[in-house]
Image (tube, rainbow, N blue to C red; front, top):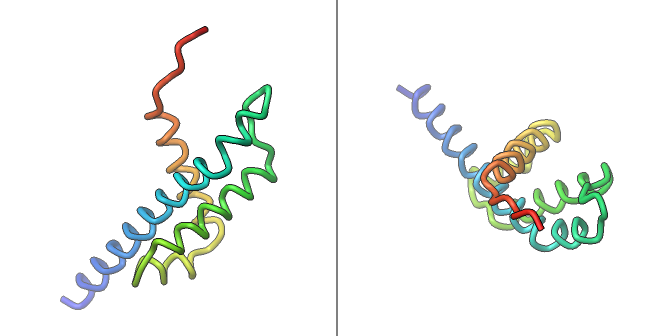
Length: 102
C-alpha cells in the first residue's frame, strides 16, 4: 500500500541522514575534536566546544548527504540532530579501544 511505501521511504531517508551524520561526526573528531582534546589536561570538551563540534558534524553531513537524506537533515529539528549525534558519539566511545595504562 502507499502508506507502507511512504514509511519505507521515510526510514530509508532517516538511515541516509544518520549515515551522513556518522561521517560528519568522524570528520568533526578528526579535524577539530582530537586537537582540542589533546590540548586539555582533563580531556573534556566545554559546552561551547561540543556545540561547535555538533555544528561542524551537521555541516559535513549536509555536504555528503544526497536526496531524501539531505532533505531530512535540513528539516530536522536541533533536538533531533543533537540526540542522533549523541548516540553516534556514545556508540563510538563504547567501541573505541581503551588505552593501556602508562
